[in-house]
Length: 182
Image (cartoon, rainbow, N blue to C red):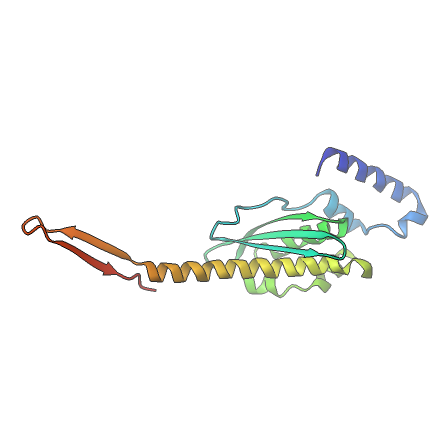
């Protein structure tokens, strides 16, 4: 977040806290905290085999969310990153999701529902689509990771390797195929 945006947000936050009328219509403090101090913002190289990328958007409001997971050999999410272009609730939902799924298995992370995110961040009904984006993004990232692993497994099993040698005595070339075992 740029210095200008942070300064603007802090000015707005101060105004909101000092005006009771505006306070009733403002973001919940948890949303403001995640917006002002986003956790795990950034990205991984999407071509890395251990990275799954979920990119989702809400055409109605223009929010776009990219959430990436890094998965270890045991199928546990070891790290998470996000980039979100949207309102404070969308950014907060992304930030919260990254904290929530770190250390979970893919199955556990895929079971998180938008209602949990909305409840944790106290999102009003008009902002529920933001929590839905976070749910959709984690599911898309998991799907992307699983497809990469499946594709890598099928490529490896088909590729194998070939030993090529040439007899010193006869000059004959011998090629032996060795399919990789699964």
